[in-house]
Image (tube, rainbow, N blue to C red; front, side, top):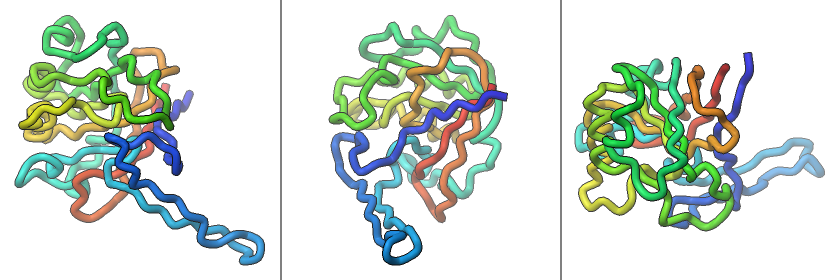
Length: 206
């Protein structure tokens, strides 16, 4: 088996959504003179590679700790949409093989963006018709290669179409060096009570 890490490395310099600057990793104990190393970690629940739970944008949606674990593991399809320059619509997805209970990950030109640069406000995003198309297909989980999946939609329709259908959203995937195709995905969130979202370690298995 080949294991491919597609996680966003969390550092003090990491790109954060709209440059929020919440990440603070502090060395609180050093081997010299303490004989032990420890760090204090402070960051937003939607930092780096993370998973949005239905509770993130729906009033009565489930939190991450209430979702079944099979949402975060299983066969996945990585679709190549690197030719798109602005937004992904239903029309862009209609000619792709998407089946019920698929885990769908989208690779776009976002994967080429710097992991520690300023937030790219002009990133490629999933337009609401694309989200509705995926929800209507009843996919299991959706993954995207930037820190958000929509761009300033007032009613957050893109998120809501998916989350209201109980489809968790993985944001912040790093797919630059990944060949589109079929893999096994393992992407389990940190186990936090009542979490609207949480960082995760995303691994592809071939």
